[in-house]
Length: 191
Length: 237
Image: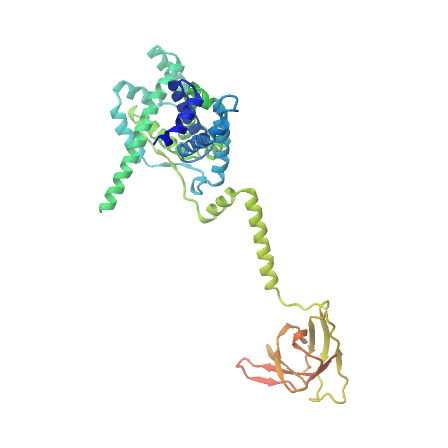
């Protein structure tokens, strides 16, 4: 057990002598790696982020004495290598471009889950997030300006506020889809 | 930019906001042409982003519904299943450059090898000794001038062109029979057929020094054979 913890502890120590700061820094690096992998078209970005961290942990005994500079740079280098490797063995199926198709208004699984998740939000947040996404183009810009004035906040603050609500909503929808997928499998196995 | 994502949480949040906005604009049909294509090619390549686009689509739809707008049509981000050619192309593209070169070379070697092994057996004058024979009415070589072919160690065989007599039965097939001095006979494959002649070939290792006679048979469609009168004579030296 102690052996398993040791490299991670060493990594945190390398990131920052202050354990709390190190934990925060670790989280920033991990989520940053996920964003980088997603942006580079890699599926299973979390796996690649953990792999990058794992590789850094393994090399840490060699590098920590001589390495100069921000540890983030080292993580970035390892991440770039993983992107190159990942591109070579990327799943075939995901290389096909997505296509937006317009279908008859039939509720998709995502829509159904979104309806459920919206109902879990307080009414003001529900209204905020739906109202914010109502318009397109120029109308959208003007509408956001009006909303900001109504709420007595800047447009940037409005954008951030909506983003936070949206992040929570998106997580809820993903969990709902995952859960309904499990239920479907469960039903199929019993039918 | 990537480095900032690893060090600056505020920038990471701003990045996420922009990602959401791009997804909204894509599913809301606010981007067109090259920009749209770029989003499809790069932005939406990972499943996470495709899920984001599905979510954005559902969110815009819910917003429209709530405002009383008629949700004309739902936007669905669909990942089409690749057909076998697309999968193969995609698989090929994803291999390392060195592996692709090695595979190409290997395929070329195999193709060239197969073509070489299955090539039509044309016997060039370079490695095959040529002999043109005309049929003689006699069945015996005595009294006629017999052509002689010399086989050197580098000669691969003899290519014999048999001129067909003027009056022969109409036949699409012929059987060519080679007979040596001991009256041992065997058939020779016809490697080329011309309007007035047939070409047969005998590898050098299948023919010894001596005198030879060739008999020609016309093969009828029902399989029966008709000997063509006369013989071809030659010597191997």
